[in-house]
Image (cartoon, rainbow, N blue to C red; front, side, top):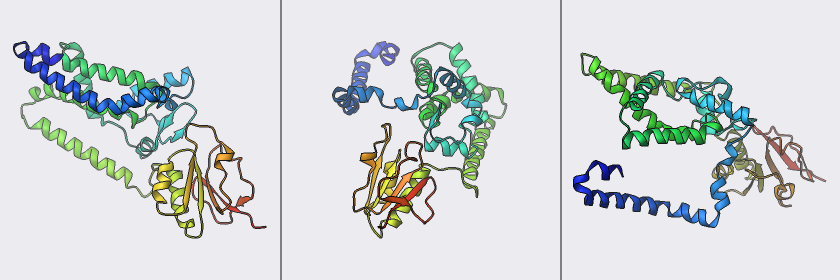
Length: 306
């Protein structure tokens, strides 16, 4: 629509370009449309698990999300898994636990200038797209809390606003290369800070910590017999680490724990169970705690000998 309005003298070519774009969007959306037609409930409710807690918790999540450009809130830093009022994935937890912030303050400053310029200027296609995307993303994602993975969709918007904020500075500085050079040095400093933080001798919790430890132990244990693993999430991590071994994984992600489904078959002698409030009271019949130390974040059970 913006292209058609902006080029009235060449409407036929603009219509063809717009039609091609719409057709491409439709073709790429066919898998999602088919999924919506066959599983409407699952389609509309996917991702719903991230909305946890009550109204007060969601209000706190909104405040924390809006404050992200100024630094990651300490109350949310390093959290992983489903908490009382915030569901953080492993990528976000790893990044925040390292002490990193999503945006350098100088980028926040530039994006703030760009936002003010956009709000005060004439609203046309690009401006409506930027502000509309920003508002829609915040309305949908902010109540779920400051997850850096989910909010990654805002990165292009914030960078575009920062670019708009850079324009006036280039006209204020007498040396034209000063602003690009400052941006280059600021980017280099931010990148070096990122690698230094993640290369510390005391690394922060990493992605799928419990699943990684379970997968590594299961791969070793599978050399002596079949292994059975029970996890609440990240089963794909365990399967990846145990590929080609006699290891089976049962996952209870978003569904209640079912002891019958979790119970290992008779041929299994080694059982690895993620430490989780839903699993901690469960020990299948015929199994006992193993003498060997368990992997981090898990219980190691072995079949009791008669």
